[in-house]
Image (tube, rainbow, N blue to C red; front, side):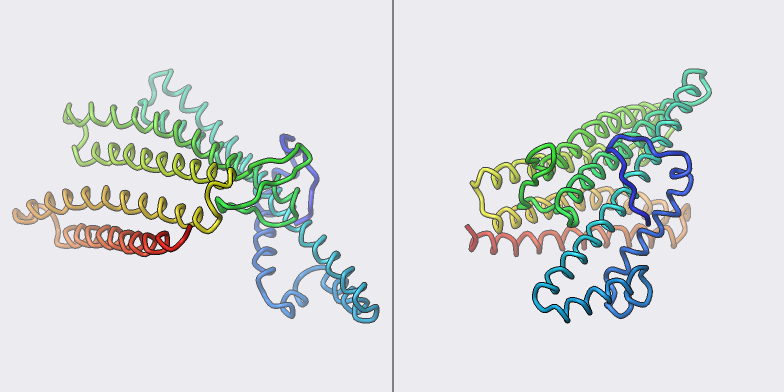
Length: 322
């Protein structure tokens, strides 16, 4: 993929936008090639012959030449990373524009009485998700441009010096997630309220309305996780917690969230299994449907057990880490 130098908020030109998905595929293929052996890369990557000449010169010139070769490699790698991140940001821009276009369409249909409120709310959720991915992509691009290395997402990652000054990009990402989740949660609550009204009126099965309520609970848990991760990041930046302990506490918070999410799904699976088992006694559902419900029950139980096991291990590690 050819590197393009675009301002962060510049709109892509029509030709670039038209070929973006094809360029992104090339970028992803190139990224995969970086993980292959030097021999394979030399056989496939454009410019490999030039790098081979650089290495030959380095061997001839000794240590100074080796350092020059390292700088050439680093420069080319940085250019590739920036190019790839540019592709991702441009694709995110396209997705956000498409989401906003779909939202405008559903708004017009709803205003004309041609559609219910649910599709409109769903379109607003899609816009929130697309906007979140675009903002996260821009933050990643800023880090790649400033550091010439892949973005560092760990809570113990260092602050980054950019042309605009020193930035806490980890905190910025968490803030983007927080804002997006708050918007998604508000929309999910509206959907759940509508579903509850329809279920009470007999227009929707109670089981379907329950799924909307579970959606609200899931987003609430994810919001709590982001809040906890923001606290951990603040403690690390303020040097109140070591890097090792910060990462263990982060793993603990994520495992707790996975356990709680699994418990939500497990409870819903139990209710669904009981309902289907009763219907199966009267021949109103197939044995296959009942088997699928049993599989879902076992899957979520296993997820809960796995999270609990991880939490036990993390508790032991945290007891040894300060």
